Image (cartoon, rainbow over all chains, first blue to last red):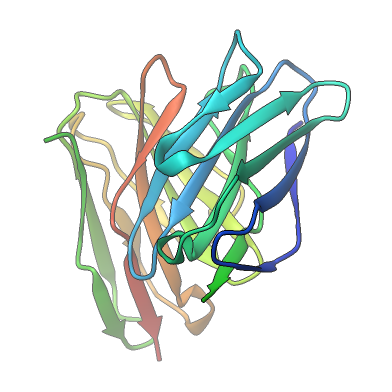
Length: 113
Length: 112
């Protein structure tokens, strides 16, 4: 079975500061891992995904995430936050049972001027 | 443009009045799914469909029905809505060898 834990339902950073959103997963099979972003009143947009290969994955808008199997983690980072990054971020996992994505409970990112 | 389209975007209804939320995708994806999003709970899967006429329950199927008569459409049916079904609903279809989910814009449903 798969599950996802996102630490911190709310994260606040200053503009220009490092963004770190944490995601840990449990999976009985090699996972596919995803980060989605949701802007207010909008659907979910894929930021990045890890399927196979390089464990450091780069996504849109300057975000990246690193798959660490030993830590069962897939934390999302961005070196310098912009005001436009304020949104809710969801980590998700799917295994070889592609019927289902398991989502974390989400982290709302607030960016202070 | 590849997209998943849900309608309506917003809906207020009364308890017990049957409603349908439509979902259509133009990517010829076989797999489609419905989720509900509630604060602090993330997205939870309601139903999914692996192909035409093939549907199955997700984690929270009670009170919902679906149908998949054609590949592009996957409507969500609430036969007798109740206030605990007030939520934000998302339809998704799966592409790229089932490694990426494309989401609709969401339907905010309020049942009074």
